Image (cartoon, rainbow, N blue to C red; front, side, top):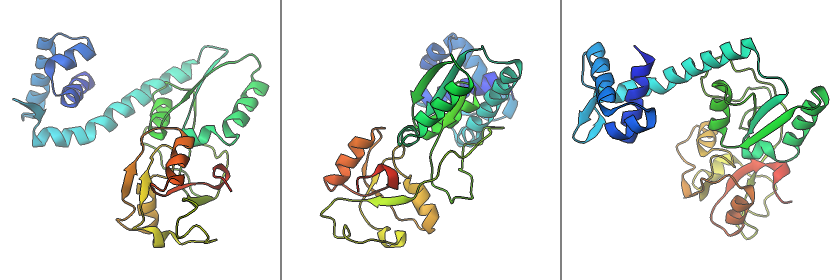
Length: 255
């Protein structure tokens, strides 16, 4: 399966338009149509409906595999480039929002500057998945990422090839809630007791609700509010105002 054809298919399916896909990929519309036709001929089945442009059932199945395939190819290319060597004196770092605060990022940068004086550093703060993906495909040299795991367990990352990981710090987790919340005076609370509470879904600045569901083997922890930003102060303001709960590192929450 030609990865160029697969990338064209994914782009058309994402945009729902042959012409929009052509503009993004820098092809003509007829070239995009030809790519899809060749891929459909190779697999022996239609992959995209035309009016409207949308994946067929077979196309949906291919999409389930396509992202991982293209990511692994990009990761392989990045590994080859790393073997050749990066330009000296430059370092690109990506950090998830919670990994960038609490002194962790500053500590990492200090270590870099001590071991490689004069290094020019470029820092990007973005979501956890973007950090892992960016490191895998060679967009960033290093990534700092946080997550929910037991102290002896590794963080679960995207399946993107040979990513090397090293633990930087561990922190206890706490449930952040408003001062007037009925449970505010409790010193300890079982996560199972909060399955049906009002939660804020802030996937990039709090423990993902999916991780809480996995930890309790439940289908609870449903969001009452979704926050897609990356600013911790905004999330704490929402919690203080009573819009919901979130699980955060203990060191990053007000006492």
